[in-house]
Length: 355
Image 1 (cartoon, helix red, strand yellow):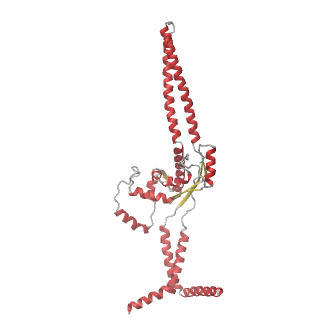
Image 2 (cartoon, helix red, strand yellow):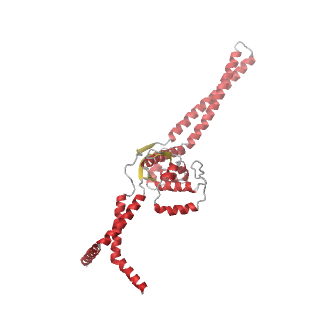
Image 3 (cartoon, one colour):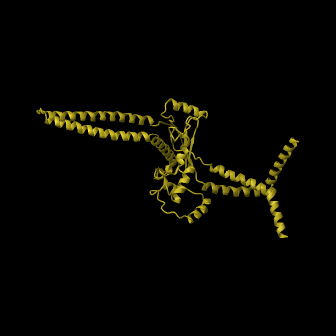
């Protein structure tokens, strides 16, 4: 039974092919029209280029052996941080959300990019001026512009709390062009950026990589930098107090070199004690400052760029030639459907309405 079904299926397919080939002129018309439509759509579909970069961040915290055990336990689904007491609130798994955030994107608006033709402009102006839109999207754009009520499209005056329609559209377009994937096992971050210009694609991928590193560094060292600034302020005050006390003691000692009065000696001893006290505080603040700077260096995350950004040589978009071939195949299928089924149905409808 199965063999008979297979044979009948083969016979039907062969029969369809033969019937379509008997009307080869109609087939050529369908394929020709489809090819023209495919060429028009292919030429109006802009090429896109994608640049990929790989980053391996340091994810270990400052908790020593406990952090290492916590990292190992997290691999098997055990969470030691029951009260959300993790050292870092920003970990590799949420880096994609950081890149997709409006504030992160807005900070990239004024990045200087260089186009393939050596033209230099900001990325915001590149999006507004150079990105080609297919003709079938024009009606949607015109309709949206009719209802456009926003003003102030300048990228120099951006309020993240209240973006204009144009700025919001640029943010949305940016999110569709950037991709950030984190390998949960190795924590390797893969960042890719797509653009119609290969040079812009490479520049933006490299910029996103460096900005993400800066963001992580700023976050992980925030507390340590505050401590360093605090101890630097105390150190400067202690140093100034010690210098003033030492200068006052030296001036008094020079003025009372030949004086043997007990009151002068008592005052000199008092100034010397005050100077020694200020010196002790100065030494303590010096040690505290060194400790704070050491902690800052310890909290500084290390990164390893596995794959750097480079200008892509080939387009990552669907090849135009295959697009035209696909439309030609679609035309041939449509012709077969017309010959086998649609033409007869249309003729029946025409005959019905004539009656």
